[in-house]
Structures are given as structure tokens and as C-alpha cells.
Amino acid sequence: MNNPVIGFIGIGIMGKPMARNLIKADYPLVIHNRSRAVVEELSKEGAQAAQTSREVAERSEIVITMLPDSPDVELVYTSDQGIFAGAKGGMLFVEMSSISPTVARKLAAEAQRRGCDMLDAPVSGGEAGAIGATLSIMIGGDTAAVERAMPIFQVLGKNIVHVGDAGAGQVTK
Image (cartoon, rainbow, N blue to C red; front, side, top):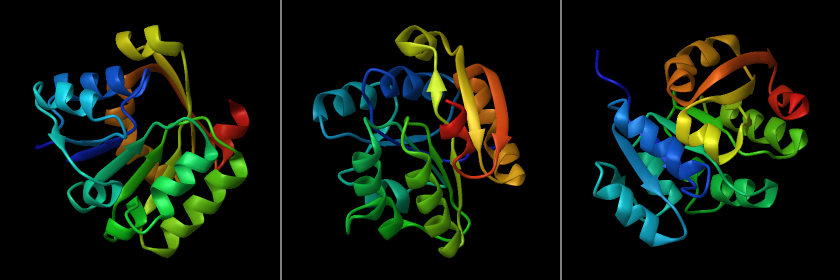
């Protein structure tokens, strides 16, 4: 079975090794980041570059975000060049940043309104865990969506726990 196309937004200290592990696991990756140098670096390793978060969503089946904090995440999802602007029904969004549970629940409700699923799945384990694919992942969201994302989580981490509904991953972390 072919792996779904994954969009990855936020190729920083944690996101870069996570994206690299997905490339190594043969996931087609469409990436976007404010800093273009890292996009060019991962493009040489097989990722496809996108100019905006909206374009990432338009070209992907699943979108992962790994961003600094709640305002960044809200902007990437809700701006006119954001993920929701490019979303199609049936998509899965996996928010892996550490953000406010309130923001996680609000974005999940908006995703659901658009016919999509969203998980909040913050990680712990630091850069070493991201590089070694040994992250701990605490997941909040719908069970069916968690099952859909589980093969991806297994590429990124070792201690993977579904802790409850939307926002629960953030609360647990």
C-alpha cells in the first residue's frame, strides 16, 4: 500500500529530524518553513517544497505541524494562506507543537466543521528523541483518527499514548 502524502510545516530543531525520519520511512513529504534554507536542504533528500501552508494542505492528505507556540499554530491554520484555506474534506491534521489545550480544542472543532480530523499530539524527548525517533507522543482526539495516524507516530516515537479527546494531549504534556 502506498503511504499517504504528508505535509510538514515547521522544520526547526524538532521538525527537521522528524521530517527526515518520515522521508527515510518512504512517506512522500511536502514541506514549508519560514526559513527557506532548511526547505532546500530537505528537498535534496526527497521532500517537495511548498511556498505556503495553504499549498502544503492542497498537496497533502495528512498535515503535521511542529511550531513554536499557540499564536504561530493559529496563524498557520487560520490565515488566508493557511492550512484550513487549502483543506479538503477527509484530511487529517496532526498538531505536534506544545500549545494551549484551548487552542488545540478550537482548531479541532474548526477542522471537524470542515469535514476533517485533527489530533493534538505534543511530544517530549527533545532533539535527541526527534533524531533517534524515540519521542514520547501524547495524543488527544478521535480514536479512528489516532488509528489512521499510528503508522506515522510509530516512525517518530516509541512511547505513544492516546490520552483522550481533543486537547487532552496538551493537558497531559
